[in-house]
Image (cartoon, rainbow, N blue to C red; front, top):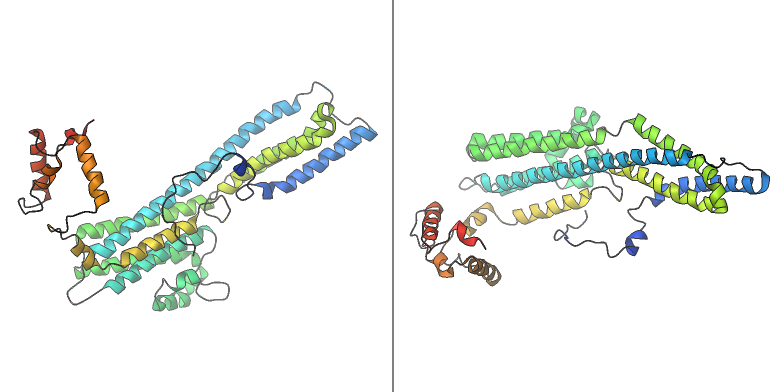
Length: 394
């Protein structure tokens, strides 16, 4: 698995124009070179015939290429736009899946109680592994790599450390699952639902937390279905075939139209026009399925690696330790110098005395809870001595 990214890079990776123009990775040159070669040879043939045999070109004044190029430009624009819409929708669907996973792992790890004398951290870790296995199964399903077993009949390595051994054995012996391997994702959701139901029955989780878990599971199922819809619903074949046909007819007629003006240069012109038109059509074809392994597809492996790193960071702290960390006392309310400096600067810009925050008395037990402190702060802001929302206007 690829190492997770440390942070989202906000800076553009493109430095100037020339490095991008000469890039091979990510371009469609590997898919366009064959049509370029074929139509360049065709243009060479037309050039040789006209130069050494007989005139084999359109008479002057015929505007076939001019009219046809306008129509093709409209069709290619629509083709690229529809392909990018599917690419963008695929990214949104994966983002919604990520949101559901993050919410689910948070509620499971912190929201489910640990009965006295029963440390269920290992059980929670197993549940979190099943969640990550679900995400991997969605990726594999989108790429046509369904099922738990590989070609040799062994459990795929990406699942080996995520599924409990007794679950692997059940999956391997489940004939229905092996004959219809695309049910793996839904089977994992069923297991997670049963896991949650067992805890609500045992009283280890309250109803609001249970509702959040069910909502996250429903969101994961919805994202899984959306991925299926995007993958299984390509652009209508008649439209794609007709577009390619009219582009190729245009490229066949192009040397006949431009030889009179360009002579031998029509070979290079034909190659460049082929690169432009066929390249745009290839881009639309490549990005209409954003879940593949092409250079321009979504980096699903990196997204999964990032989720894996987040889960590892979460399980490094027990639930009891996380709750204890937020048992706010006078000593634990101190923050590091950087955070305190930024907070002080914010208060200074808003015209609020820094000492007024420390005098609110919440950390010293003056108020019963945070809501009392907020109400007191709002009242103080109205009289000019507290933190008010209107005081931050510049």
